[in-house]
Every structure is written in structure tokens, then in C-alpha cells.
Picture 1: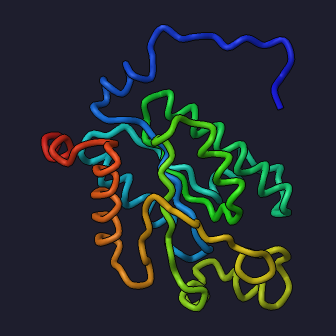
Picture 2: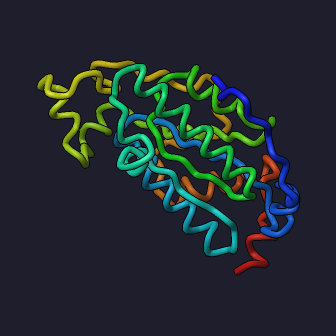
Length: 207
């Protein structure tokens, strides 16, 4: 849906200008996976690596966003859909600003992830699937959420009482129950280079 009586205002500085300033292409790096699969950990580790080499980045984390922008939303199907819609629109703004927007959301439904992909130009949305077995996620259970879900104290919990739809063709897949954090980040950076977000030589020169 769009508001009535509004006109898009074209800015003097373009996305291409900002990309040139930052020395890399802007994009959305969208981490998806079960709770406990390592999305937030990897998102922050990736940002640290990119930040240290001079990239313009920001991490948008699921829990953090629900403290403010999406604090009014429930975890119902409708609430989750609106949560991802808002994050998608905000991520698009960061892409226009020349920033690599790194997001960490369960985002369990394919149609929601597809809608965010369709918001931006082809190649601007990089889906990173944090593949991890449910057993391992439950063993980690950093927040104690799986135990509550198993007892029925949390309704519509992804992986327990609500489905998680695995990506059918993720741009990048990391096996977080088999690979170390550094190995996962190394693989992601290699793949981002393959997708022409930046060149490793650019990162090395910025150190």
C-alpha cells in the first residue's frame, strides 16, 4: 500500500555517488535461519570484518528492531509479515544510502523474504541461510526460548509450533553447526566478492 498525494523526491546525491565514495556496492545481506542458528553472531562478526576494512555497514537485528520500530507487533503470522515488510523498506533506504545493510531475522516464510528481494534491484539482496539442525539450536538455546516453546508457554514459535521454510536457492549457505564463526565469515566474504559487492583487494588495501 502507498500513501495518497505523495511524490517521490529525487535527491541530488545518488546511490552511485555514495557507492563510489565508500568504495563498494551497497546491498542487503539477509541472514535467515532458526533461532539459535547463529544469525546475530555471524551478522556482527561480518560487520566487524567489513568495518575494519573501511566499509559502510549497519546491522539490523531482530530483537533490537522490536524494541522500537516494530515494538507494536506481535509474533503472529500477520505481525511477522509486517515486521519483515518494515525491515525490508528500511533496508532499502540503507542501500540507497550506499550502506551494506546486514540483517539478522528468522524471517521464516519464503514469500516474506521474496518480497524484500523484490524491493531492490537484482543483485542487491543477498540471502544467507544459516543452516543448523533443530537439535543443535535447542542445545544452544541461549535465550531459553525453546524450553518455553516446548512447554507451550510461547505460541507460534518457529521450528516448534510454527514452520520454518528453508530457502530453496539461497545466495550463500553456511553450516553453523559444522563451521566456526571465522570459517563462515571467510566463506561469506568470498561469496560477496563473487557477487561483485566488492573485491578482496579493496578490503586488503583498506586495512
